[in-house]
Amino acid sequence: MLLKSLRGLFALLVLPFVLTMGLGLSTSALAVDDQTSQQMANTNDADLWRAVQSGDSGYTTKKGVDSGVLINVSAIEGTEIKNQYLTPAMALAVLGVFGAFVVFYFVNGPSKLSKGYSGKMVLRWSKADLWIHWVLAISCLGLIFTGINIMLGKHILQPYVGEGIWAGLIYGSKTIHDYVGPVFILSWILCVVKWMPLQTFKMYDLKWFLVVGGYINFGPFKGKHPDSGFANAGEKMWFWTLTLFGLFISVSGMMLVLPGLDLPREASFAALLIHAISAIIIIAFTIVHIWMATVLSEGGMECMKSGYCDENWAVQHHNLWYDEIKANGTLEYKD
Amino acid sequence: MAVMKFLCDTKRCIECNGCVTACKNENDSALEWGIQRRRVVTINDGEPGEASISVACMHCTDAPCQAVCPANCFYKTEDGLTLHNKDTCIGCGYCLYACPFGAPQFPKKGAFGSRGKMDKCTFCAGGPEETHSDAERQKYGSNRLAEGKLPMCAELCATKSLLAGDADIVSSIYRERIAARGNPNAIWGYTPKTGA
Image 1 (cartoon, each protein chain N blue to C red):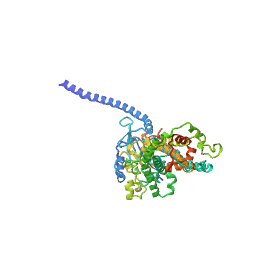
Image 2: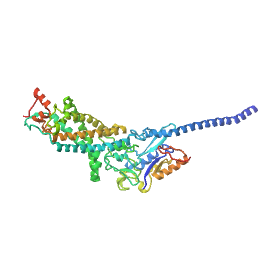
Image 3: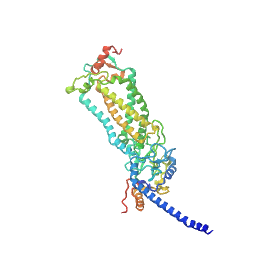
Image 4: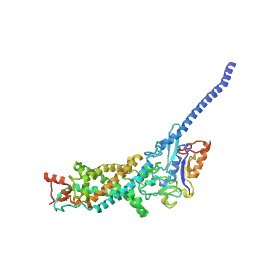
């Protein structure tokens, strides 16, 4: 009984002791653990925020792409590239190229047909070609004007119109830009596929560049008429530029216009920058292209009006093509 | 002139998402389904060194959204807030790409850019419409600032982790906490010179 009670007493005395010891030990162990983890956390704080700043993502209940990303690293950089380089570059492309061409035109004068008009019209473009060209041209011009308003409008237009008019103009520009885009893409695909065989570079194209296409009316280049096939080297350059940057602008445009794709913001911003760069290049070339066709090259515009060109124009500007169709009998005169 | 700022004390934020709910409720009239102006992100979730931070529009002084917007619909208020005009917004999404914090929200994801008008935190300061008008409430939500109150998210924060108000006052509150806590680097890029 005593033993039993002693044992009981022992148990009563020792158990709490052991328990306290154990608990004490475990708390001290916990404390050590806590300390190390806290130290880790402290030393990791800088790393943590560095990771956040470099775009690491965490957990969030918010649904959607990139919701867990606290800092979007590309944002500031992209904005700076767009505002500091691309917007001025666009202004330069529009005004600079246009202005340079005006100056060139007044200094140099148009490229006249050296033998005048023959009156005999040679078939150059089919009806399908004309359609492709004009659908592409009109959609492209629509995109250019609305696009220029989207990129430069807030600098060159908004200060001079009322708030409501500006809101209407910019919303209209964006809406037209969005819906004309697919028309451009379709006609661009047809243009690239149908006209590519005519646009391969040949050796004589190098010589074309050496005499600047024969459009210069003074100095050593005066009166030169370099060889060229169906398309001259300048036209080929325009074609391949439009092919390459047309691809970039179409793909990036689709990335921007379809929010359902749920692209990461970096990809969207990259698309925006690629879209702008491509637009700058295409616009610069378009201005040159329109100037060449309308005022610089006498008789050039007729090709895209009726599909026929003057025989003398063909001989002067596309001699190899003219010789070829004359030789193989595919030359077709207008009735 | 005040410069209004948010600051989230990551040592206090417990990721309760109360701020998100408070914001959503307060600005309900302007928020379409699926839009939340504020979110809580937890870094190192479930690991040592876990930190939660509540984010919405930070009302940048030199705001990239304003710089990139083709419609120029953003404006700065005299309280240093970056607000926007939904009537001018064209829903292009550029501000979302340019925002470092992912603040701009779009109600729709339709093809051909029908994202709808951008929505973001207004610091509970409404918009360009007449103060406390129906139009303001429908487009931008509440305007507590005009009543002399601070944003609902910060006012309802249970741990007083999310601070909102004049930058000087917010930072002095935070500096006091840091001094008491002796814990530098609690938010990134902010290393107060306190204690020895």
